[in-house]
Length: 240
Length: 110
Image 1 (cartoon, rainbow over the protein chains, first blue to last red):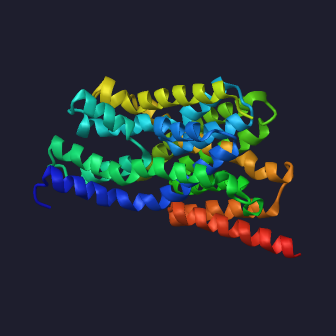
Image 2 (tube, rainbow over the protein chains, first blue to last red):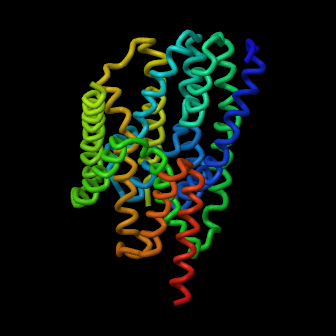
Image 3 (cartoon, rainbow over the protein chains, first blue to last red):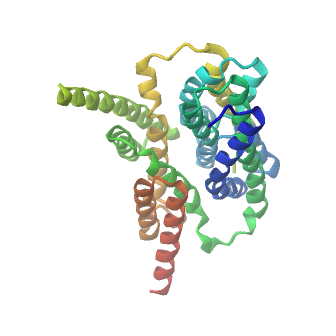
């Protein structure tokens, strides 16, 4: 591909971001519905999506609040869900770290799974791009993804209470989470972490305030890291 | 019922905290790389939290008063299975929803 202008990179980003709408549409609407079902006023449901703009942690926080979990534990668990974004931030820094402070702040706000996935795969393919081109591309990918997230939340919040019981919407949130988990199970380490999380969360469910989930999550991260090291050691043995 | 103070606190702190997590390297730390052992743990955060969060909702669904429900159980298994197989969130979501409605429908007819 020849040297891209900022404008062509912006529209390339837009096209790369577009397919993510397919996933965001049910997810965003469901968050709006879940917010309304949990008794949140429209303004609060919308603010959730605009201020936090991270679907999985929004669902997590909402579910724990419905369960009457203390605020500190709601925050710790929901923030833990978003810790992966520190990795996104770190991996994009070599490509975007040279931007102005306000640009980096804006990029950080819009750094969601979809925009990260677009940016990292494109930047790796186009090592010759300038900083301006990369920034234009990033905001191109933001355009179909982030404003839709607000709009879809609004649609969901507005139709929320009109949805009949037989639609079994109580299970919409679990389905969303489960659908995200499957594709994440890329390696034996991811699988081990997920199984640890499930087994410990169920056996520690008697611990009040959802503290069992936090313990399960920390243990699962350690198991994931440990299995990764073990697999590496094993493949090195096989090679030598 | 969730109290107004709780909601506003969670939105404000979760919003700020999430922004700081995203801003961390881009904004404050610059190009310095994270220690390998930290990255190794960060890689598993999502997969360590989400399955544990969802497991009780599958095993003890509130809609059935906390007793195991074949429709929800099967839908969950199909949803994860299709997700692993297709690597596609949307197909997994659809497969889970179709299974849930199909089994709920059959159970209603029986």
